[in-house]
Each structure stands twice: as structure tokens, then as C-alpha cells.
Image (tube, rainbow, N blue to C red; front, top):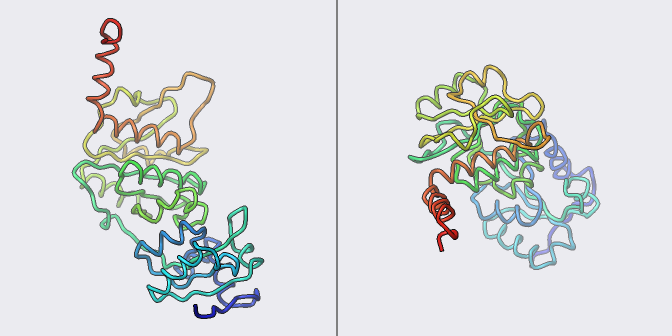
Length: 287
């Protein structure tokens, strides 16, 4: 194997670039982002992303997973370098320390890039600031087959390392569109015949009594303030998830999961629910 050069100084230009990309303003300035952890680096290598370079710690480079990453990068003519463990740890947001990073070019997507299906849903996030919530919601979108996550200004950056990790890589697969204009979003939802659903902890129709349309857009608001009045104004209805304990509300990603899977149940599994109810209504449980 060809000898790899090693980054050992914090004055190295690649190290300084990688360090800058851990912050939102650095990602905005350079149009790049960092992917860390072996699983996610392999994901971008296999997923057709434009990768500027890959860096591994000397120890990790000698492991089977490290050698796999090096081989895949070289097959794609991507530059590979080593980086001292201390410098890698200063870049990494992984608590246990980093072993590999890839510096990747961002993809800019617009509403017109979203490829819709006849039966589809999207999640609209208004000022959802916690990266772990944005990552979790993106993972749910991937799991239920939603076509996109649409985010307003103020929502955590898709390329934030915490979003990427908490999404378990789904942020690399699901269309993620930032919109600056409420009018643009409203027009797109209307043109594509979405039923627009706001959420509220108390003042809405029970989510289990509503029959969803063939295309649904769920609106989720800021963790503390919820949806703004202007965002509520574009909704066709408001749904509430029933709660029977003392909690005032649910975490936004938990609410997203409940609503998304109720939608999925109605679309694809309602006959199975009916069969279970019919059997339970029969004497001896239908035996």
C-alpha cells in the first residue's frame, strides 16, 4: 500500500478547514461539511457524494474497516491522508473520540427537486433548533418513506454533525430543503395538493379520528414556542395526540413518529387493524 502522508500540526491547512467545518458559519462559507464515524464515511463513499478528501488516524487505518475505507476512496480517486489522534479528537464531535472523517461537498436542494409519489408525505420544520430532534425526524422520514424534510430558517443545519449522527445516516438519503419564504412553501403545498396538518398539544382534533388524504404535510414547530401563527395559517387542520398522564407535551420527534406511523397505518395496514378488532369482538377472542 502506498505510504500515506500524516497531518500532525494544527497549522496544517486541511486540519484548519476541518476544524472550521465543525461550525455552522464554516460550513456556510466553504459549502462543505464533515462526515465522521466509519459507518457514515462508508455511506457517503458508496452514495455518490462529491468527497474532497478523507482522513484516518494511523491506528484506525490499519484496521479492516479502515482499509476498506481507504480502498473505496482510492477506487473513486479521492485523496486519503492520515491525521494524528490528538488532532482528530479536536475535530470530532463523537464522545469516544474520532477515527475517520470525510470532507464532503454540500448539496443544495429546492422544492422543485423533491420527487413526489402519488401517495406521499413531507415533514415541515419551523425553527426546530435541536440538532438531535432534526436528525431523529429525518430518520423517521426515511423510515416511513417520506419524500422530504422541509426546513425554515432557524432550523438546525442538515449538515450539523449531530444531525447526521442522530439521523443514523438518513440525512444523507432524504431530500432536505431549506425555504426562506412562507409564500413559496404555501404555493408548493397547494400546487401539489397536500393536506397540511398543524400539530398542537391540546387544541386540535384527535389524531386517531382523522382520516388522512393521499398527500400529507405535517408541520412541526419550535421546541419551546411551537408553531408560529403565520405557519398555522397555512394549515388545513390541527391535530392533537391524546395524553392521559401529567405530561404537558411530547418531544417534537416523538410526536412526529406517532403521527407518521398513524398515517402509515391508515394507508397500508387499516385492514389488519380491522381484522384484529373483529377477532377481539368475537366470543373467546375469535377462537
